[in-house]
Picture 1 (cartoon, one colour):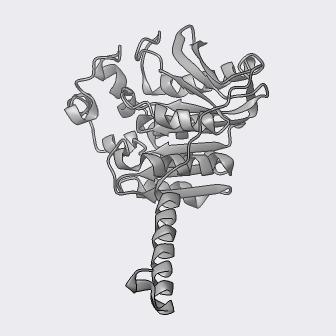
Picture 2 (cartoon, rainbow, N blue to C red):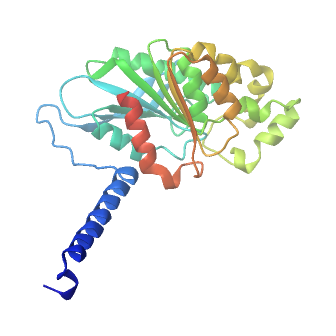
Picture 3 (cartoon, rainbow, N blue to C red):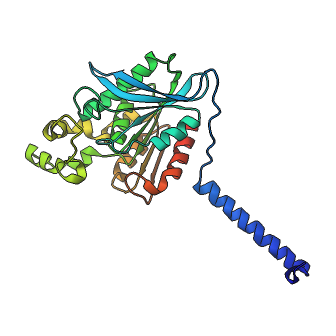
Length: 294
């Protein structure tokens, strides 16, 4: 035995240090990682992906479903992308599907190949129509319509909170880095100011994937500000389970308004990250899974 271990105290110290190392390593793993396993396909009803064309007011929305494994009906998460939708959060979709949920992703009217005209209000209406599609196709797509949840990022966070007001059967919504459109534009007084502000590169003025002009997209914000004021919908969201997660504190007043009216469950966090949560993907996955299981 090496000289270090000739005394019992030294040996005990060595084992203590080893145990401390492994305990700390395990704690880090439990905090900062997520365990994934390959899916063992159900021979009769394997997990897979199916392209969808979803009707929405005389237009078809391009989308797809990540079907969960197994022949039973599965709870289903709808992914609502931002403006214009470069970040799709499909890494999250794969993890949620492996967790036993279907995941449906789609593009709003007038964006990324979907038919129809793009507008913020149409985006909200599209979600309502996708839920109706889920109910109509519940058997063929193996959707448990009693357990549908929404996850929206950026503009999709706005869409999530607005659509939940119109969907009494949907109880859960996760709004990631919600775009408070009303808050950004409430001080704008004229159409000229509105279009000029909307044309700024950081607000998507250079995007060409949407088939509506900036005037068409942003003029309704000026004409109907109450519709875009998410705080005014707090009462309509009172019985919903909600999470708002941000990378800044600009939505704190909105979060407080929603929290004060909430009678079910509301959580608001701010993390040190960027808009797409680049350095927090695993932590985000863990929070979403815990919320879906709640």
